[in-house]
Image 1 (cartoon, rainbow, N blue to C red):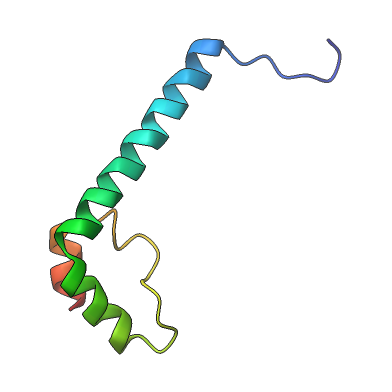
Image 2 (cartoon, one colour; image 1 turned 120 degrees about the vertical axis):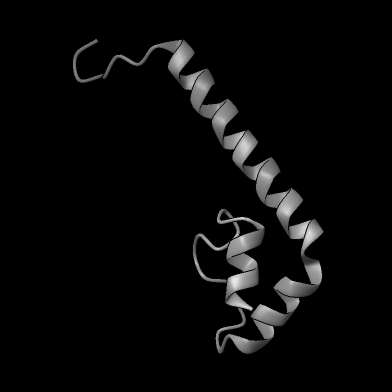
Length: 65
């Protein structure tokens, strides 16, 4: 086992659960604020949302728009 880092299986599962919960939250926010997201993307020259704006929640999206 030389050269391998030891990571507990429980830590790996915990990280996967956190990732899934984050993606679920972002999907919920995107569905709930679809029109706002369209408006923000229309105003942005690249046509994309800023990094982290979805994870900021409803308040962050309302502030951007």
